[in-house]
Structure formats: C-alpha cells, structure tokens
Image 1 (tube, one colour):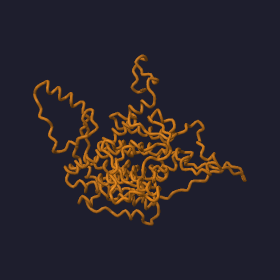
Image 2 (cartoon, one colour):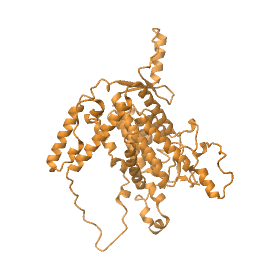
Image 3 (cartoon, helix red, strand yellow):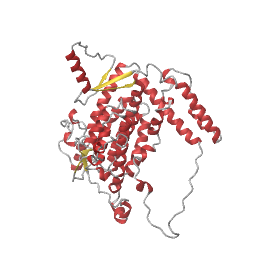
Image 4 (tube, helix red, strand yellow):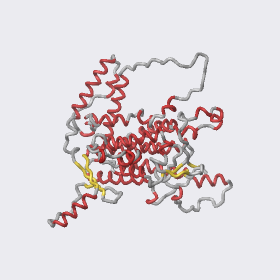
Length: 478
C-alpha cells in the first residue's frame, strides 16, 4: 500500500476498511505465487501459535458438545486404505513404506507438541497434581473447545481451490499449502468429519449375511463387531479433501495415458529427491558441529521449581515438518534452483554414472571432506545440466478450469480446440467466454515434481488421521 500509494491523500486507502482476515483471503486468491505463499505461511503461524484467536475469525467453526467419538474403527480402516491407495496411484509404490514411517514419527511429535493437545492427552491425576504445567504461557489465551470446520468456510474453500490446481502451482506455494492444511488438522479439538474424514451420518452398510449370528451372548462383543464393519458412502458424501485428491488423481491418470513412460519419469524424479536428500545428510555428518556453550542458570543453588519444556513455551509452527528426518521441505525448496534436482541418469539412460553417495561419508578431515562434497555436487550439476533443457521436459501442458466449475480438464495432445469463426460476434463471444475460464500451464518437469510432492502430502494426511485416532481416541470400538 505504501509503495503504490497515490499522490492525493483523498485517494489513499484506509487500513480500517479491511482486517487481517480479509487480507489473507484476498492474498490466497491472488495470481501472484509469492503473494499466495506469504499468505499461507502467515496463516500457518496464526493457526499454530494463536489457534484460539483464529477460531471464528480466520476459521469459521461450529462448536459441539458431545465428547464421545462418532466415527467407528471400521470407518477409520477404510479411510486409511482409501488415502493410501490414492498415494500409490499418484506416484507409485517406490519408497512409500519408508516415507510413511517417517511421517508417522513426525506427526506424533507435532501432535504431542501442539498447544491444544496438552489437556487432551494429559492424565487426570497428573493434571490435578500439577495444574500449572498445562497452563498456557499466555494468560489471555482463549480456551479452545471441540468444534467442526464448516464446509463453507472461506479459507477452507480457498485452500481447496489451490489444492485443485496443485499440478500447476508454484513449488513454494504447494509446500506452504500442505503445511497450512496439516497445521489446521493438528488441533486436537478439531473434528475431521466433513472435510478430511467421512461424516458418520453418511455411512452405509451392507445387509448382514446369513453367516452372522442373529443373537449374541455378549452385548459388548456385538457392539465390537458392528463397529468393525467397513462402511461405504456415496460419492457426493466424500470429504472435501478426499474429493479434491481424487480429481487430482484423475488428472494424473490422463497424463499417464497420454505421455509415454510416465511412471518411469516419476520414479526417476523420486530417486533424484532421495539422492539429493542423502547427499544433504552426508554433508551435515561430515561437517563438524560446535557444541553451544551452556548458559549460566538463573536458578539459585539449592532451589528447584517445575520447569515447562521449551518446546511447549515456543509453540513453534509445525516443528516436525521443518526438522523432518527426511528433510522433504528443505530439500524441495533447495532443488528449485539446483540442477541436481533432476531425475537420476540411470533411470533415463542419460549422462554417465553418478558417484556413490557413500563417498561423502569418507573418514577425511573436515576441510577435505567438505571440499570433496563440493566437487561431487559440481559433478552432479554438470551431469544434470542438460536435463532441464531437454525438449521433452520443457513441453508445456495446459489445464483448463471452466467458469463456475470445480473440475480441471487436462488439455493434452488429443484435445482439439473448437474451430475459429471469422464472424465478429462469434469471435467476441468466444473471447468473452475464454476470459471466464481459468487456464494455466506448466512444464512437464514442473508437473512431475509436483506429483512427487503430492504423494508426500497424501502420506502426511494418512499419518495425521492414524496418529490422531490413537492419540486422541477419535474412533469408537464398540
């Protein structure tokens, strides 16, 4: 506003005309990738560090009063299976087990350190003996009660719109988008029904078979069997996130059917990410770390007071994602400007043999090891320099979202535009219609990179649903 302020005072905008929520919502719908990324990062910070103040303003919610879970363990199993099949259908099964195991550990750490989780997972005896431990560091912080996220929430609809255009989004935008959605789902008081999990009122069960007993000797055993049944639901009852991911999978299936050796290119891209990550970790191990000097304690000798863990006071926004053992976020962000992010030559029959990552772990002195790592990365850059200039990966693919529609069409080589008419009125009408449609394009290499990121995000969602179910007792077994 300051940079674009008009000369006349009367023409300047008054900041009181809009608030921070309006600024965020307007920025998330911007066509500028940097504006969207900054708005999403700001949203993540607000939701993570000031969650109580975001409810009702940034997030439109509906408070609930029941505490007993409504979802069944059978519904949990079928939902996890559905999301896992989506992840494997997006980018294959290679490395899924290792990635999912890493996300489970990260998600448990994130949920346990969330401010809203302390009182949910605390034991009754410990909370009564030391209530000060679970007191919020800010005395004016708002209490967060159990709530649902309204499907018509403007922020949620903006996030769904960005997720629907995931394949053409900027990489930094997608990383910020996934971080925001994970931050929203990390609140222990937020119910997943409606936007990430199926609403229990939409469950449908098959009629009981003749093999099942009509009478049960134990009512508890009967309830357990009923709760373990696998439900089905109609397509229009699918959660918002699941429906959007299924549309993205349809877009990827269209690309797979049109582009030769699609799965091989995606697998090579995943291999490149893993290789870059291993090299990044190897460089960390070969660099000597200086132990920070211990700060003198302010506590007098002989005195003792209960200490609140530092991670609770910090309330850092998504600590486990930024310190992930897989290093996904940092690795992807670095590879935007690094030719080493290209697929491995061994998969493409390309430019020679890449040296083994184990050489970076050689027991050399620190300066020599660092120099050797630098030389290795220079070799990698030289080997992969021509990949981004490949005509195959530079191919531009367009995606068309018709006006007032929630579906995105992939305009592939089989797509034939309507014939042009020389009539002025027809041409004007066609141009007017084209302006309403949201048409975006990206290179094939950019799309494949986003496909790999999308699979990691789906695995994060699966880990989030599973860890929440066990940590917060969100499903019923009877």
